Image (cartoon, rainbow, N blue to C red; front, side):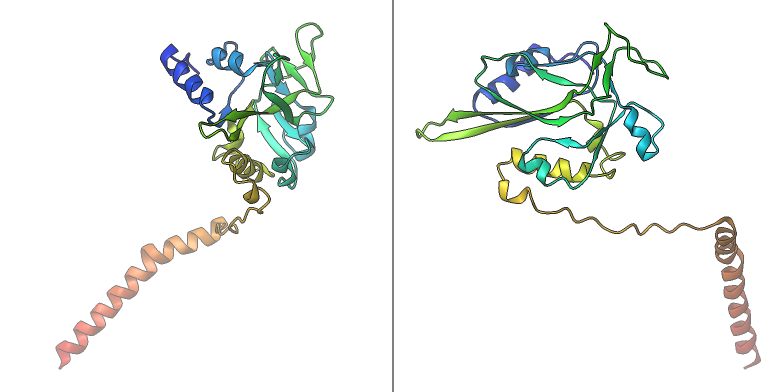
Length: 242
């Protein structure tokens, strides 16, 4: 949300220059805080926030939630079993055709989605201001890096135009968790782990109605203390008689 210091950006660029892998999650912003990094990677962020009218299919009234059903042919998406959900995302596109990086669009929006530059409650597509879909929400960047022992290493970078989909609030929605774990395993070069399905625990939350909650509350606040008091008085009376 704030501009990075030049020294901090240099540290990231030095890390990438040495062949390090990177996961970059960003958000819609008028002035992205890491423009120098975007130029280094040869990508740019399309102005505005993605609007997807298809969100209503899942009962979501906010069109700023983007549903992704169009995946690239990649091990990451092959491990993703259903749709993924991205709140308030930004679109990405490569701009450096002569770069040594190889670009692959990972997530693509539906055709009727668009990038809206106006923060309206009821967004509509404005010709000349907004960008019509389909748009790419995430890109994978790879290149071969030569190591000191004359061997080669595939450097991997994932740039995603949303960070909320992996937050506690949204990681449990649809296949967000599967996508996030597959992306992490790919970046960590653990390709054999990408296709392992995610095991989630069952929902053990207990939901009670008002009557049940009232009975439990009265039981712990009145009935249980009264029983303990009655037992205590009974023991006191029994010992006194002896």
